[in-house]
Length: 185
Image (cartoon, rainbow, N blue to C red):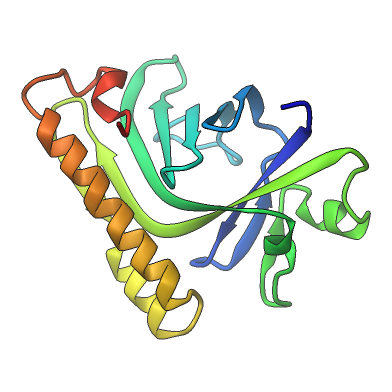
């Protein structure tokens, strides 16, 4: 692919669009996008990480690291890749990290925006093997209040369920801190 891309994260809770302009894109093809990033704000619990967006699977897996570069855990977001149409947000949406400038300028010439909508369910895989599912309450609230469509809810639940089956099938067979444990195949 020869397009220059810029990534955006669209969250529904909180309602925000973030330009990931500072993420370093390490690889980009039809199957996945790999990035290196630092947290947008200084944090004490982690410093940044490496993320792989599995474009056809609807999963973003991040290797979370501390300030010394030590592995902390895997953070798996259930996402939906969208194009430029997802940049059309309501007036209540908070624009972060350069999203406002990008939208006002009409986008950058020769840049293809890719928007990842966060479908709220997160799966955390700890190195000790503990697998946590988070934010299902947010998914229910977003569905109830109309922030997301029933189709998005269905996609989030089915993707999470399918991915959890992959993780559970590997439990005890592969070290949970090994990247192979979290790859969604």
